[in-house]
Length: 278
Ligand code: C2E
Ligand code: CA
Ligand code: CA
Ligand code: CA
Image (cartoon, rainbow, N blue to C red; front, side, top):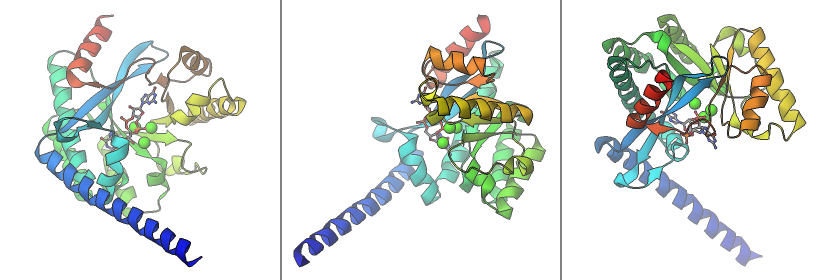
C-alpha cells in the first residue's frame, strides 16, 4: 500500500542518513585521535611449529577512542581506508613499530615483524617512499619486515599498485598474503607477485577437525604453498586440537589466542625476553 511504501522509504532514508553521519563522525574522531595520540600498537607472537619457538610477530593497530573504550580495527580501518586517513595511520604505525624494533634491538631481543598494509597505501609511490624512508632512517634490515597484503591487491590489474609492490620487493621487504582463501579462487597471481608466506584465514582454522572439507582445503593449501616454496601461517588457532592437526599437515607457523593474544609493547617485551630465555 501507499502507506507501507512511505514507511519503507522513511526507514530507508533514516538508516542511510545514520550511516553517513556515523561515517563523518568516525572520520573526524580518527583525525582527532591521531592528534591526541590515542592509537596504540599491539603485538601478537607467531609461533614456528618446527622450531617450537616464537620467531616473529604481527603488529596490530588499536584505538583507545576518547582515552577510554577500545575500538576494534575491524570497525575503524575500513573507514580510515575509505577516507584516506589510512595513509596517515599507516605511516604512524610504521614509525611506532620501527621504534619498538630499535628498543628491542638495544635490549638484545630479536624481533621479526609483520605490518598490515592496505591497498590504498599502494596507490602512490610517495607513500611507499615515505615508508622506506622511515625504515632507512631507523636502519632496520628489510628482511626482518614482512608486509601483509590481501589477495585483492594482487588481483587488481593496476599498474601503480604493481609498481609499488615491485619497489618494495626490490628493496628487500618480505611479503605475506593475508586472509588467504577468502578473496579469489584464482591463484595465478602467485607467479607475478611472489610472496614469502601466506596466511590461511581463520574461518578455515575454526572448521578444522569439524568439517572434512575444511581439513582437506587446509591440507591442500599447505601442500600447494610448499610446492611453490611459500611458508604457511595458520591464523586464529584457539585449541590444542587445531595446533596438532596443523602440525600433522606440515604447517610452518601458527598464530592465535591459544598461544598468545595481541599485547601492548611493554608486555610483548617481557614475553620475548621469556621466550628467548626459555
Ligand atoms: P588480520 O590482519 O587478519 O589480523 C588478525 C586478526 O585476528 C587480529 O584482529 C587478531 O587480533 C585476530 N586474532 C588473532 N588470533 C586470534 C584467535 O585465535 N581467535 C580470534 N577470534 N581472533 C584472533 P584485530 O587486531 O582485531 O584486527 C582486525 C583487522 O584489522 C586485521 O585483520 C587487519 O585486517 C586490520 N588491521 C589491524 N591493524 C592494522 C593496521 O595497522 N593496518 C591495516 N591496514 N590494517 C590493520
Ligand atoms: Ca594481518
Ligand atoms: Ca588475516
Ligand atoms: Ca584482514
